[in-house]
Length: 152
Image (cartoon, rainbow, N blue to C red; front, top):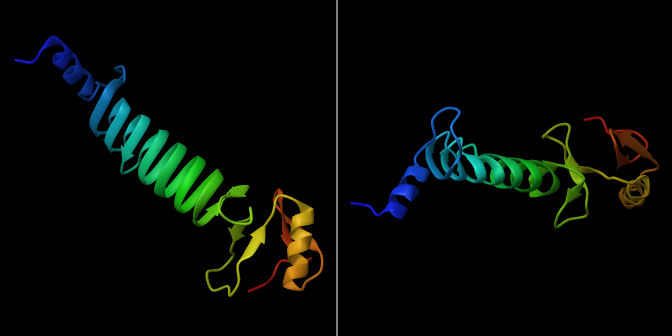
């Protein structure tokens, strides 16, 4: 027979009913809890296949801080990511951590070289000189080296 404290913890760890309050620990399919583990977990700390939370760890994560294969949020580490600060093989966002602060911009996978978009016109001009081209051009709110976008 569980103690009252154990019973309280067990009742908090079961999956809430639709429209119910989040549990402290929720495990299952679409669990809603402070700490959620499962398929499509939602909570402050979410671990699973498609986690959504403040801290998300999983395959396709959405939240403030993510470690995932595909992630979207504020601070992201993964393979293909979108965020304000990001670390990954390919991504979008103003600040790429661990590199030159640009993000990779590819039109075609066949391209021989990666072009970078920069938050400032001056940085793009410096990169254009390194690449041996003149001028810069706008790409959304970012700047890219060379006066014209390369054609593949």
